[in-house]
Image (cartoon, rainbow, N blue to C red; front, side, top):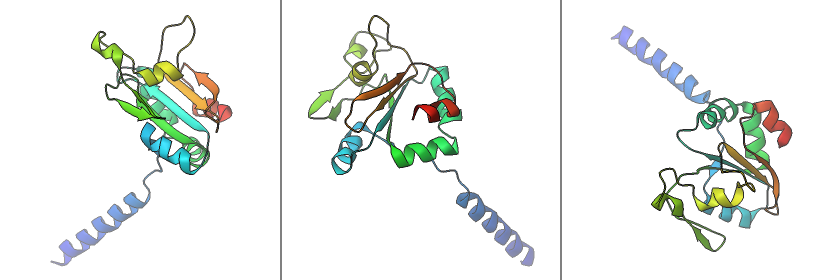
Length: 156
Protein backbone atom coordinates (compact mmCIF):
# COMPACT_ATOMS: atom_id res chain seq x y z
CA UNK A 1 0.00 0.00 0.00
CA UNK A 2 2.83 2.36 0.86
CA UNK A 3 4.60 1.70 -2.46
CA UNK A 4 1.37 2.31 -4.34
CA UNK A 5 0.82 5.63 -2.55
CA UNK A 6 4.39 6.77 -3.20
CA UNK A 7 4.13 5.76 -6.87
CA UNK A 8 0.86 7.64 -7.20
CA UNK A 9 2.33 10.78 -5.60
CA UNK A 10 5.37 10.68 -7.90
CA UNK A 11 3.15 10.22 -10.95
CA UNK A 12 0.89 13.09 -9.82
CA UNK A 13 3.87 15.42 -9.32
CA UNK A 14 5.32 14.66 -12.76
CA UNK A 15 1.92 15.06 -14.41
CA UNK A 16 1.42 18.43 -12.73
CA UNK A 17 4.88 19.66 -13.68
CA UNK A 18 4.51 18.53 -17.31
CA UNK A 19 1.14 20.27 -17.64
CA UNK A 20 2.56 23.46 -16.16
CA UNK A 21 5.44 23.40 -18.65
CA UNK A 22 3.31 23.05 -21.76
CA UNK A 23 4.36 25.51 -24.41
CA UNK A 24 2.36 28.60 -25.12
CA UNK A 25 0.60 28.46 -28.48
CA UNK A 26 -0.50 31.04 -31.00
CA UNK A 27 -4.08 32.16 -30.38
CA UNK A 28 -5.42 31.45 -33.87
CA UNK A 29 -8.73 33.06 -34.79
CA UNK A 30 -11.31 32.23 -37.41
CA UNK A 31 -12.46 34.98 -39.78
CA UNK A 32 -15.78 35.50 -37.89
CA UNK A 33 -13.85 35.72 -34.58
CA UNK A 34 -11.40 38.13 -36.24
CA UNK A 35 -14.27 40.37 -37.28
CA UNK A 36 -15.55 40.47 -33.68
CA UNK A 37 -12.06 41.15 -32.31
CA UNK A 38 -11.48 44.00 -34.78
CA UNK A 39 -14.71 45.65 -33.63
CA UNK A 40 -13.38 45.67 -30.07
CA UNK A 41 -9.78 46.68 -30.77
CA UNK A 42 -7.88 47.46 -33.96
CA UNK A 43 -4.64 45.51 -34.42
CA UNK A 44 -2.56 44.35 -37.38
CA UNK A 45 -3.56 40.94 -38.77
CA UNK A 46 -1.34 37.98 -39.64
CA UNK A 47 -2.95 35.41 -41.97
CA UNK A 48 -1.41 32.05 -42.86
CA UNK A 49 -2.97 30.06 -45.71
CA UNK A 50 -2.03 26.39 -45.96
CA UNK A 51 -3.14 23.06 -47.39
CA UNK A 52 -2.75 19.63 -45.83
CA UNK A 53 -0.57 18.40 -48.73
CA UNK A 54 1.85 21.38 -48.59
CA UNK A 55 5.22 20.27 -47.18
CA UNK A 56 6.48 23.82 -46.55
CA UNK A 57 3.22 24.71 -44.79
CA UNK A 58 3.77 21.78 -42.43
CA UNK A 59 7.37 22.84 -41.85
CA UNK A 60 6.30 26.40 -40.98
CA UNK A 61 3.66 25.08 -38.57
CA UNK A 62 6.13 22.72 -36.93
CA UNK A 63 9.22 24.94 -36.68
CA UNK A 64 8.18 28.58 -36.98
CA UNK A 65 4.81 28.67 -35.19
CA UNK A 66 6.26 26.83 -32.18
CA UNK A 67 9.08 29.37 -31.68
CA UNK A 68 8.56 31.23 -28.39
CA UNK A 69 9.47 34.63 -29.85
CA UNK A 70 7.12 34.21 -32.81
CA UNK A 71 4.32 33.08 -30.49
CA UNK A 72 4.89 36.05 -28.17
CA UNK A 73 4.98 38.58 -31.03
CA UNK A 74 1.85 37.23 -32.77
CA UNK A 75 -0.14 36.86 -29.54
CA UNK A 76 0.63 40.35 -28.26
CA UNK A 77 0.82 42.52 -31.37
CA UNK A 78 -1.37 40.80 -33.97
CA UNK A 79 -4.57 38.93 -34.54
CA UNK A 80 -3.48 35.65 -36.12
CA UNK A 81 -5.62 33.65 -38.54
CA UNK A 82 -4.74 30.25 -39.99
CA UNK A 83 -6.93 28.98 -42.82
CA UNK A 84 -6.94 25.90 -45.02
CA UNK A 85 -6.88 27.44 -48.50
CA UNK A 86 -8.93 24.50 -49.79
CA UNK A 87 -11.65 24.79 -47.15
CA UNK A 88 -15.12 24.10 -48.48
CA UNK A 89 -17.00 25.93 -45.74
CA UNK A 90 -18.74 29.23 -46.36
CA UNK A 91 -17.35 32.06 -44.25
CA UNK A 92 -19.23 35.24 -43.38
CA UNK A 93 -16.93 38.23 -43.00
CA UNK A 94 -17.48 41.96 -43.33
CA UNK A 95 -21.10 41.53 -44.43
CA UNK A 96 -20.25 39.11 -47.25
CA UNK A 97 -20.24 35.34 -47.54
CA UNK A 98 -17.17 33.74 -49.09
CA UNK A 99 -17.06 30.17 -50.35
CA UNK A 100 -14.97 27.78 -52.40
CA UNK A 101 -16.55 27.90 -55.84
CA UNK A 102 -13.53 26.20 -57.42
CA UNK A 103 -14.17 23.06 -55.34
CA UNK A 104 -17.25 22.41 -57.46
CA UNK A 105 -15.14 21.89 -60.59
CA UNK A 106 -11.54 21.36 -59.43
CA UNK A 107 -9.87 18.77 -57.23
CA UNK A 108 -7.88 21.22 -55.07
CA UNK A 109 -10.07 24.28 -55.44
CA UNK A 110 -8.99 27.42 -53.60
CA UNK A 111 -11.40 29.29 -51.31
CA UNK A 112 -12.36 32.85 -52.25
CA UNK A 113 -10.68 34.43 -49.20
CA UNK A 114 -7.12 33.27 -50.01
CA UNK A 115 -7.74 34.08 -53.67
CA UNK A 116 -8.78 37.60 -52.68
CA UNK A 117 -5.96 38.25 -50.21
CA UNK A 118 -3.05 36.17 -51.53
CA UNK A 119 -3.26 36.26 -55.31
CA UNK A 120 -0.61 37.79 -57.56
CA UNK A 121 -0.98 39.16 -61.08
CA UNK A 122 -0.10 36.63 -63.79
CA UNK A 123 1.19 34.06 -61.26
CA UNK A 124 -0.89 31.05 -60.22
CA UNK A 125 -1.93 30.84 -56.58
CA UNK A 126 0.71 29.03 -54.52
CA UNK A 127 1.29 27.90 -50.97
CA UNK A 128 2.41 28.61 -48.36
CA UNK A 129 0.90 32.08 -48.48
CA UNK A 130 1.20 34.57 -45.66
CA UNK A 131 -0.48 37.97 -45.63
CA UNK A 132 0.31 40.67 -43.09
CA UNK A 133 -2.28 43.44 -42.85
CA UNK A 134 -2.08 46.80 -41.11
CA UNK A 135 -4.60 47.92 -38.48
CA UNK A 136 -6.60 49.47 -41.33
CA UNK A 137 -6.73 46.09 -43.13
CA UNK A 138 -4.32 47.27 -45.83
CA UNK A 139 -1.80 44.74 -47.17
CA UNK A 140 1.58 45.39 -45.58
CA UNK A 141 3.35 42.30 -46.91
CA UNK A 142 2.68 39.07 -48.77
CA UNK A 143 5.02 36.08 -48.56
CA UNK A 144 4.72 33.08 -50.88
CA UNK A 145 7.55 30.87 -49.68
CA UNK A 146 8.99 29.13 -46.65
CA UNK A 147 10.46 31.40 -43.97
CA UNK A 148 12.35 30.86 -40.75
CA UNK A 149 11.44 32.20 -37.32
CA UNK A 150 14.10 34.89 -37.65
CA UNK A 151 12.81 35.97 -41.06
CA UNK A 152 9.19 36.26 -39.94
CA UNK A 153 10.20 38.21 -36.84
CA UNK A 154 11.97 40.72 -39.11
CA UNK A 155 8.85 41.00 -41.28
CA UNK A 156 6.56 41.59 -38.31
